[in-house]
Each structure stands twice: as C-alpha cells, then as structure tokens.
Image (cartoon, rainbow, N blue to C red; front, side):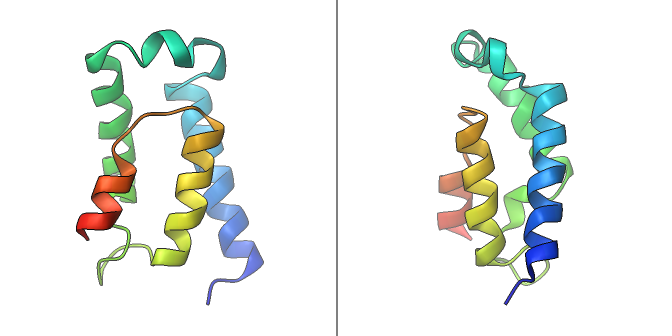
Length: 86
C-alpha cells in the first residue's frame, strides 16, 4: 500500500513533467500530431511510467495516480495499453 506522500510525489512529478512536455494550453492541438504524442511518451518511458505493474516498476496503485494525472493533462500517451499489457 502506497503512502499519501508517495502518491503525492508521483502526482507532483507527473504534473511537472506535463507542464514542460505537454502544456495544458496546447494539449488538444498537440494530440493531433503523432510526433508530439511520441515525444511525451518517450519522456514518460524515460521516467519508468511504462513499467507500472511489473516487478521492477511502480505498482498498480501508482498506475491509478499516473492515469489520473495523464487525464488531468489531457495527454493521450498509451498508458492504459502499457499498464494492461504489464
């Protein structure tokens, strides 16, 4: 079970990542450009967010936080398929 501090740390890190790599004010336009989606996905992978549910990755509880923050940022990165596959 994750602590509140761990959940908040993940959420804060993702908010910072999205603020730089997927700003809310351009999210809709950027979501129409596959290269932009690939770029933010590469950032998420670099941070290990594609490994949710794997033994060496964040747990499934962290996956909920990750999906919530991606939704808040209106980011279409393929997190659900990655989490489901893991």
